[in-house]
Image 1 (cartoon, rainbow, N blue to C red):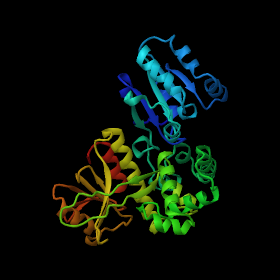
Image 2: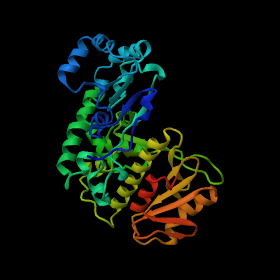
Image 3: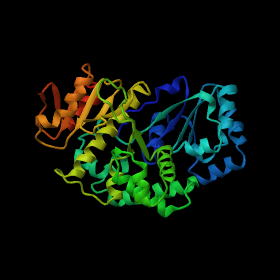
Image 4: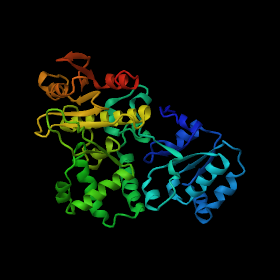
Length: 381
């Protein structure tokens, strides 16, 4: 069994919401970390129906527990009314709760009690390289980093099932998409523009729907944790910069499978885009697990489109560019060079497929796999 990095030590003092898309391993993690906790699994039909009929049953059962005991409710978004009972039990019985789920959207839209700051928020991401012994970069790029997908030699059938059964049916469950055909087309167009600056008008034209609908669809993907925005780093010194965000699917394999661009072959443009996506995915998880909301991940792009840096950590503390080339030249460093002129205090790193690290024009050149090892060892930030 793979050991996950997220340990949820905050539960010693606070209750928690634990969010993450399906199959990231939330249930397995909770059972591993807290085997003695009282567990309610709302994926079980009988358990879910009992609480839907009588949410007060949770209070009646948990009032029998001792103060400070831990209760886990898995897939809590399926019975939002339980959160009123959880609130009462926290306030009156001193119980601690971990409330896990794959989407907070349904809770917010139903007007559910989100506990008014009485529960911290943590997110479990797909696997990261540091959790996998003998991490295989090419397998990660092709299979993605969901545990069930990475751990098989060929994940095509599992990805097909995941996209069909989850990405689309989950949206249907949200009861906000009336034109499923249009939404399916949107998923594909969003895959084409994955890791690129979002242009709602262009996407709307390609999908045959309005820009307003496109924005709503992106909001659905974000709120159901199926995708995320990477904001622009907008601090201006000399050069004006773009303000629009980029969009990424939550897992590196999703866009390429939607577009049937597998297997990913080294030396292709698709390989380069996928490599960048994986690095962003790892950075996002690293910062969340280690810094919470204290360090933001963004990208930097000048308004004249001449210079770009794929990832910026914090207040321009680190700038990272990703190239899939196995031979880096001075031309490849121009974005980071200009970024360094704007933010001379920054550490600048270029990731590549070269075999050994080196220094070029004051910029650190690192093989991707070695960089990821250093990242999780705390040697980058």
